[in-house]
Structure formats: C-alpha cells, structure tokens
Amino acid sequence: MEEITKAKSRDYANDNDPFANFSQVVSMGITTVEKGFLVRILDKISRINNYANHKRLAVLDESVEDTILDCANYLILLASYIKSKEKK
Image (cartoon, rainbow, N blue to C red; front, side, top):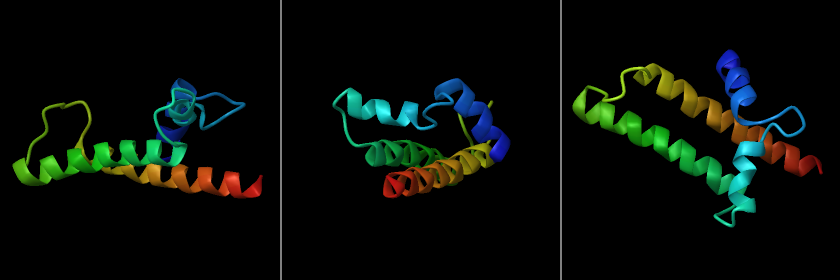
C-alpha cells in the first residue's frame, strides 16, 4: 500500500504539498478537501459494490484487491490530511 501511495503521489501531487491533487477541488470552487476525499472513496466503494453484485469488473487492469487497497489508502490519506490541519 505504501509503494502504491508513493507512486501515485509522484503522479498527482508534489513534494511541497502531498495533498495538492485533493485540494484542487477547493480552488475550483467544487467542495472541501475532506468531501473531495469522500468522493474518491465512494468511487472505490461503488466499484467494490458492483463487483460484489456481478462478480466481475469491466476494467481488467485494476483488480478488486487493488480497488480495496486504493480505498484503504484514501482513508489513510484523509486521516493524514485531517491530522495535518489540526497541527496548523
């Protein structure tokens, strides 16, 4: 999970702001960072739910196990974001 998070962080965020991609929802006037996390988490839960209902996935390059790990990583990142805000 850590390696996946590090790799995705390199693609989506930057060294100065590890939550840069998540905070873009605020700068675009869409919602809060926390709710942005929740949208991504709900996307993963929806995918897991569809798998549970149909026992198959349409996108084959991401397994259901990958989706579960992504969901867990988003939850950990959300906890880290909230903790970082409390420290400020």
